Image (cartoon, rainbow, N blue to C red):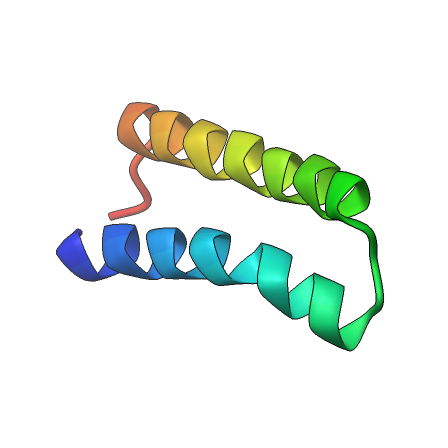
Length: 54
């Protein structure tokens, strides 16, 4: 569980600078996309607790 949380935080923290540098997105565009990533990350954690795979 710890590795899952750490990886999710690492992806969210590096997504904005990576998109701005590699894809030439503006700060507003990256904020919207990172917001969506964050929402789905949170939903995945809630659904994963409710309906565990294992």
